[in-house]
Length: 344
Image 1 (spheres, helix red, strand yellow):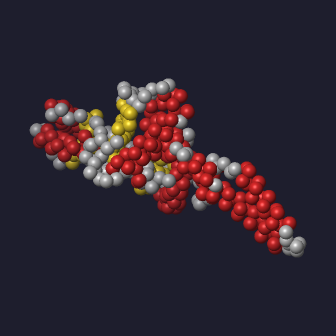
Image 2 (cartoon, helix red, strand yellow; image 1 turned 135 degrees about the vertical axis):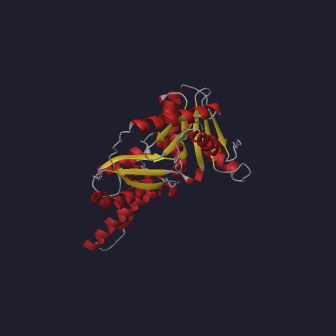
Image 3 (cartoon, helix red, strand yellow; image 1 turned 180 degrees about the vertical axis):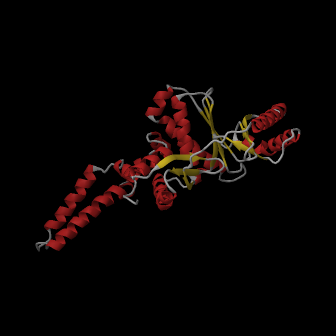
């Protein structure tokens, strides 16, 4: 199943502009040196010259940002988040690359809670899955490396057809009673939650909490206790209770450019360890990006980190194709420490 390096490498190389005058100058200098040779080069030497010319070209291509200061200056100013804005999301990139290599896939997804992970779900038999899972993982690692994403773990899973067994009348009643009792208790205690999901067959209860990851971490244990109290009032026992949390990117108003910007900021900052971003939320009025990090406010690096993050977001917002769609709308970037203090 192994094939050439993924297209993402080629795409990144194609974006590099080689300065024509520098290339022409290098070729001219090479020709001048060749004229000074008294002996006619042998065939072997011709091959060596061609190889040297090829090496010279690639040195110009990849080394230009270091050799020529104007290009180095330009390269240093390329906005990181801006490059993400112009491309597909990381899940779509991986899906396209893997499908092009011929893998049979069900889905590719990226998640940040409870950990930053890329999951590739593979279709087919057990034999097929076992024969390709290592190759797929290696290919995903290459794609992430090419993008500079270093905070993801990679999970290769096998697709399983879900067969939803029908509940008996007795189980339906059990589910209804428990759901109603726990929901009532949580509402009475003013906890913010999306759903209470009761599975009488596996004896599991899942409570999906609303709000930020900070709210989730601060209330999950108390929510479980409240649910246990409610369960004890019923005639049913033997259940395990779990408090879960939805995606960390919260968009309060449907808006194409707002959603796109938030998605880009989320992927870019959450995907690299150096930014130490754990959570991102977005509000429309006023347009505000709330970014949570894993550093404490007392950490000497907190200020520098916040400046780096704010710079990336500002560079994105200044791009013509972003600012034109915002139509002059102002925005704020608020960066928080692990202990919920503003650090920018």
